[in-house]
Figure 1: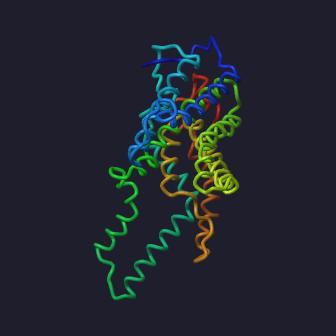
Figure 2 (figure 1 turned 30 degrees about the vertical axis):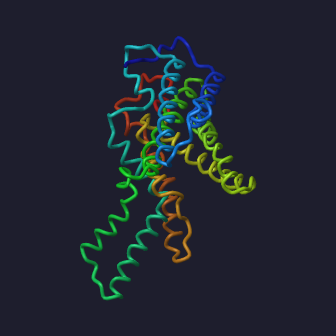
Figure 3 (figure 1 turned 180 degrees about the horizontal axis):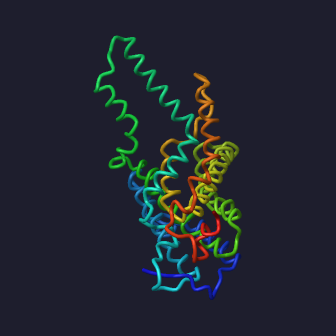
Length: 314
């Protein structure tokens, strides 16, 4: 499938906002379609429940991709439509390595803490008269990569490391950002506006938390924290997508953050974690623009379409 920007028609700001809002609502609403609309019986297991949600998320993603292609001012037959969404194979290793290295700086404290725990485990073995054998090293490595390797049998791992990151990046970055950019919003407005729609998709957790905890105040506190975190991450992911024009960049960052969870900033056991966190933050700020330079991810940055804002963001 191929397309190119015609320049004859523009997406209005109101149309872009309405389309993004609709995509966010549909992404959440369709998750409840099997029972509320199709009147299917409740899932008999957690695995079947999650599989239903996977199918719903996939349908929502495809719907958003099609809707976006119909709204954007494109002409079929001139260039690959997938490039609109940042779905590309060129510069793939840059889109994996550089964003991953940049994101890992924010987790410097977490990585140092894990390293210290690993060293403590080896020290404990030596104190108990056990040598750090090859089997011990294998067990430590297996414990580190187990959450990823368990994807084949762990439905929750499939959600955290594949389905959720992929569908969310497709809808909330690949579809919404081109619409907002072509709608005439400034670059930084898009970077900070897009996460608002991203956070709306997490408000459905409010009812779930209230039912689980029995307290609306507790539910508001938990979901409020989640929304705040998703806004921060959403801004960063949007920044990566706009700067690189590559969907892989925010996707690998999303998977990495899901794997490690919230960054560890302070640890009672040692001040090294705090020092590493501060150093990582400073390194992140210093390298944020150099490691996301559009020239690293694109063969050319001229004659670009309205959804390729990286051409004017050097």
